[in-house]
Image 1 (cartoon, rainbow, N blue to C red):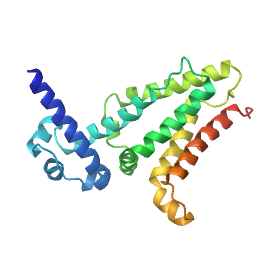
Image 2 (image 1 turned 90 degrees about the vertical axis):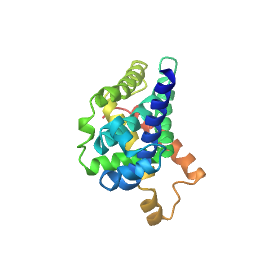
Image 3 (image 1 turned 180 degrees about the vertical axis):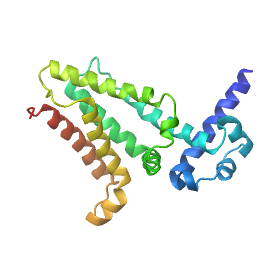
Image 4 (image 1 turned 90 degrees about the horizontal axis):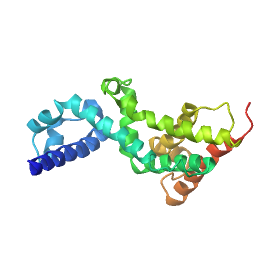
Length: 210
């Protein structure tokens, strides 16, 4: 029984990994269940067994993608970190995750093309994302308590600024790179841009309130 359960978990995990690549490359409309099955060690029938079909598989891929960034955020030790160090660490961690998971960026872009139609169908995704806001709330509260952070900025503001900057590095690297003759993916440039987002957020939060 235990071995069968492990096999089922491995099969499901493999399907999610391959489906992530296919949906990120071809979008929801262009992806084909037959192709996903062909690139795994399973069958189309098994995809329907585990996920109920293409839409169910796509929703599972989206949920797993968001789970990845939320789990990464939990690695920050807020309780024992200076709030300035903690917010910089969060900004840099978000940058690293986005750069290292470009499929996540493409999936988010695809879902926005569909106006969030599928993400609304995922029960519990807002609950899954709540710790991200709670983490920021805690960092900001500690920073304000220490007298180092401004009081007119909330967690959603900070999350939006960090996410927008980090998404841009991946989503627009080819167009931006061509227009301004810069390689955003080069190690030196990436290191520089990683430091910039930390500086931007810390500088913003430690500036006087309007």
